[in-house]
Amino acid sequence: MTQLPKCYGIIPARYASTRFPGKPLADILGKPMFWHVYNRAGRCRDLTQIALATDDERIFSAARKHDVPVVMTREDHPSGTDRVLEAAEQLSVPEDAVVVNIQGDEPALEPGMISELLSPFKSPETRVTTLVRKTDPAKIKKYDDAMVTFSKSGKALYFSRSVIPFPREGVIDIVYEHIGMYAFRMEALKKFVALGPSRLEKIEKLEQLRLLENDIPVHIVVTDHQSMFVDRPEDIEAVSRYLAKDNSS
Image 1 (cartoon, rainbow, N blue to C red):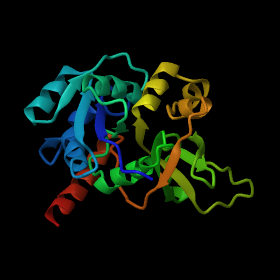
Image 2 (cartoon, rainbow, N blue to C red):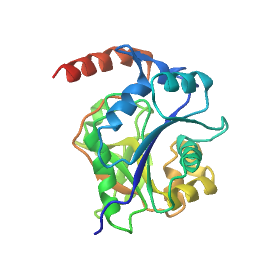
Image 3 (cartoon, rainbow, N blue to C red):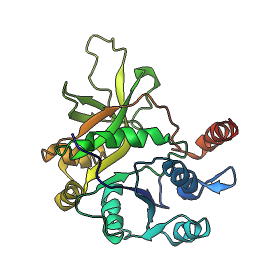
Image 4 (spheres, rainbow, N blue to C red):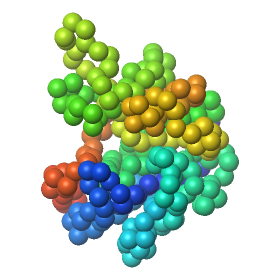
């Protein structure tokens, strides 16, 4: 085991969204959602630098207004991770560094989750990590949430929008819900983008399947931290209440 390499956080922020157009700019307690993500990620001491990556002038201008470091990226990226690589290259991230893809729709992000995600990179063999948490199958939102199964050594076996493993006898107490935050060594990030979208990725609309289909191991980190995602406009109220309470504590 060694010390962590330099770690960079990048927050992809697109304006276009089927369920919630303009989501990164959604007002939460007087600030755009991306500001809350950036602010909370900044509490993680393991990150050397954090920046927003967008393809939209409105988001770019708002980031500048709120003093959030931001880079403008192309509009035609097939996934958020492809956008992260372009941003990392613009920021001249070193080849031996680790890049964290921080979800821009998680304004109540717990900084400790990032530290957990990065911890496996103390081993030089780790190439990609992602977070999961235990959850009750009854709470899963069909087709919105992604499930994961993994080996005894902590390597991902498969991700799906269906409940996995399938309870053939009708009983399953715990499943593992995927949290869409990844960390890549720079070389693994470059390889991910160079490969292009894979067959299973296109079917399930889950970009992490590109890694598994190409035999790139994904190290699973189980977290006990809870967080709140913004998927639709109606989620804003609950997140605002949570943050208001958290800020006053």
